Image (cartoon, rainbow, N blue to C red; front, side):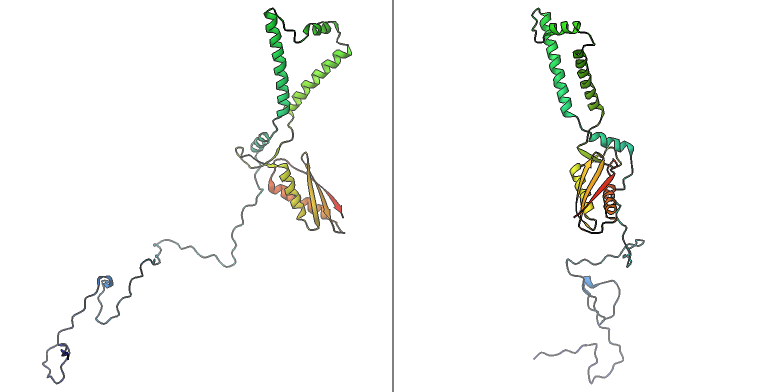
Length: 272
């Protein structure tokens, strides 16, 4: 049986007091991770352990920083900018129109081929004549004799001159008058940014806008030049004001798409 040794700091039962104050009990050593630098009396509660490995303690914001406030109840965020509100820029509009102007490929090719053939024949005739062996590919002797012997008042001369003049005028008009563009230029406000829409896609978008009007079952849109023609079918008996509603819806869609040109809208309402 182990013998229990009494603590010297505690009085022994039955022993007489000597009048001396017992020495204080030794303070146990504090582990380094628990030592906060502040003195504690013996018997105080030990500090809590450090957070587990891998956990992150919340950081305190630096002095002077402002924490983001929570949105107030009922507050609404600013609405996004409305599409289609592009400022008009004349130089940007002209750049878009020039970019989508048709190149007149077919008339240019035909003219280039004709001029090349005529130039080649003339060159061959001149070179062969200078060498003393004319090719006579073109009977210019008979043409010259007929031209010198025929007065200007002759109907054949006038018809030939008129035909040549009409061909020249046609070529000039093809070069000056712009044709129907393959794409519809859209306003961007920047001359370096050019955007275009296909005519079919533009018409489908307008038809979809017309079909969104209550009472319209089907709508078809055709573009005639720079005018929009809407043919809408309705199954309603009372169609008063329906054509105006369709026109307004189509105009709103045109404004949202922001084409460079203005497109007047004509609505034809058909009742089933």
